[in-house]
Image (cartoon, rainbow, N blue to C red):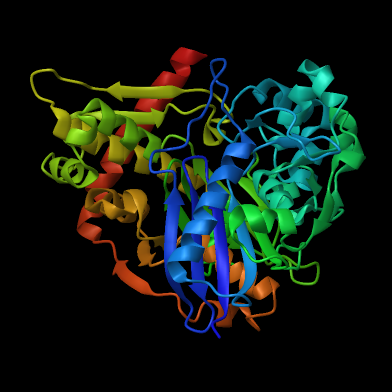
Amino acid sequence: MRKLLLGLDIGSSSVKASLLDADTGKSIISKAFPDQELPIDSPKSGWAEQDPEMWWKYVMEASKFVHQKAEVKKGELKGIGIAYQMHGLVIVDKDQNVLRPSIIWCDSRAVGIGEKAFENLGEDYCLNNLLNSPGNFTASKLRWVIENEPETVAKIHKMMLPGDFIAMKLTGEILTSETGLSEGIYWDFQKNGISDQVLSNYGINPEWIPEVVPSYSIQGKVSTAASILSGIEEGVPVSYRAGDQPNNAFSLQVLKPGELATTAGTSGTVYGVCDTPLHDPKSRVNTFVHVNHKQEKPSYGVLLCVNGTGILNSWLKQVMGGNHIDYDEMNTLASSAGIGAEGLSFIPFGNGAERIMQNKQVGAHLLGLDLLKHDKRHVIRAAQEGIVSALTFGFRIMQDMGLDLKTVKAGRANMFLSPIFRKTFIHMNQVNLELYDTDGAQGAARGAGIGAGIFSSEDEAFAGLTLLETFEPNENFFDPYEEVYLRWKNQLESIQKMNL
């Protein structure tokens, strides 16, 4: 009989399910739902919300699809892992009904609340105990609800992250994790527990916080009702959960100090692992509890995030032809423009408040446009170089913190499919790049195997991970790409001065 593991990746663009064969370590089948990107509601400028029940709807559809296609038999499925979009706020009443739409990761409404909390709690406490300013993270979003929706607050039973919500729908149990609480800025790293100061400052009822479980652990079993709706066998354990960036790092076997992972989907990230609790004095990159953290063997993840990454590329595609042009054609056009796009620069910060910009809404800017010289080739190239420049800006902050950034791992997907993007990334940052055949759903499935005891170790869980390609920088390109970055950085600084 096969030993199968189900990974679920709850993104803001889609919900993906992947079935992994534990004996071979290979994915049998993966499917993302829906075919078009999930809608994000924006009732006011800077707001971003999604209906958690929409995520559950597509979890059910994706689970049924992969079960049917793989002809899963009773007893074959051994565990379920859940990865999810970070920083989203889900609140439910005592009957587990959702009380309001989820305020998701790219929503900017709570920036001012986080800034006020930083003042009230004090810089010393925030940076040494929380390793971050409270910023626009989940705790600040919950405070916004407390200040603005008293009718909702009166009904709150528990607050959750998106993955906690999906686990609740599957099992009926409301739980969370240390890594999840740290991403919400509820975690005191000195205490190694929930921050009483944060809860007190924000007026958060401690009873709203779910019970905490390790990322790898049995976290409830699929209920009868969920089995009927999802096609998943009743009694299968949920045995792993993690936010998308810690999980992406996990999916690439980035688990030891000095190892790095990167993504370039809707947002772009670099995530580095360390065994000491580092922080950026300006809190432009953020430190969280990593999935394999233990008190006796600490593990932390330092996250750099650029909201305006794949979403800029997607926007350009729509502007330049929608269904009449594909990403391969765009990449081919960009490659004919030349390094530096003949002086054209793109500042990609057009998707809410950017953490590396200290929670400012800088906006997206196309700079240096010459109507007699530039065409769509240059615009596409400038956009890709601008995204990498933004990542490089954060990359250098991480280097200043003491992280050793030499080799970066990524899945061969999204913007890393673009030769121009890859070439710019490795030369601007002077790093080796390794591309693997994996994704967040596969990572969640491997995590489920560890949590359910199917794999005896992390090394065993990654026996089937396949390295597809390795790229090394050529020092002849260091100077040209450094010129592109410095021009971009100077233009960014000019924009920031204008906005003061």
